Amino acid sequence: MELVEKEEPKVHSKCLKMIVPVRDALEILSGKWKIPIIISLSFGNKRFRQIANEIPNITDRMLSKELRDLEENQLVKRTVYDTFPVTVEYSMTEYGQSLDKVIDALCEWGTVHRKRIAGKD
Image (cartoon, rainbow, N blue to C red; front, side, top):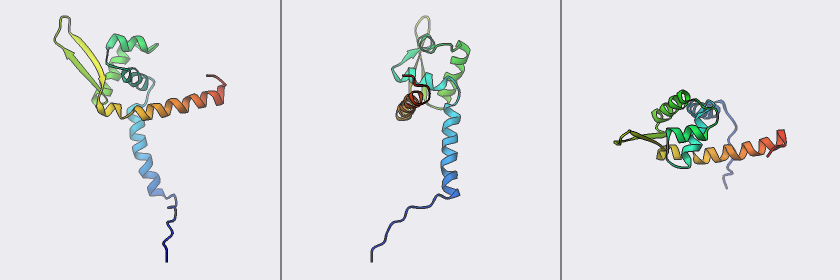
């Protein structure tokens, strides 16, 4: 007699096991600026001004705050070089690079959604 594997029904406990980690991820990545900063740094190490120039309408104060948050969550690394004047460079950590697939999936979904809803490219 063969055992037939049945699909597990959706249950409340499975729902909670999905909601909590997704909520955690969204809390870290939420806001208008964090994902654009991550995208900017995914194309290479940059200094503060380079990041600011790549992200339209972000203020220096907001960029500084968001970089601190991303650094606190170990997604971004801040390196200070002993030069005159001091040089500060930001880069994605290996942990931050683990978001590459998530960002790619969001980009793909957003492109399809934009075409579907607005008929734009």
